Image (tube, rainbow, N blue to C red):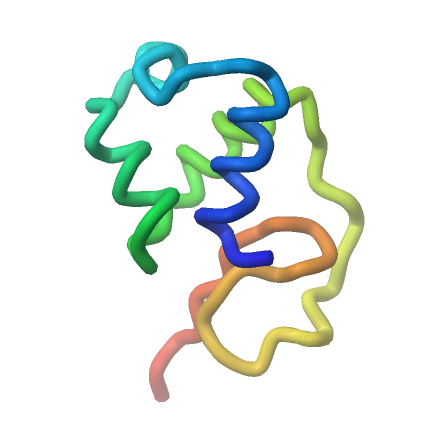
Length: 84
């Protein structure tokens, strides 16, 4: 499951419209649409807010399975690999 799929699934599981989630996060509903339907990822600040809205706390994770930039499937944290 990708990050956008996770956001959409959690939102829909709570019966929320994109507009409702956008208000809770302080963003435009179009932003929620983009997060759910494209490879655009929310900034870490918004991932933390999403976890709060969805009543989830990140698990202790070392992100061992992440070899490139992307969402850790174990804990949902978006990992940015620094370029060397």
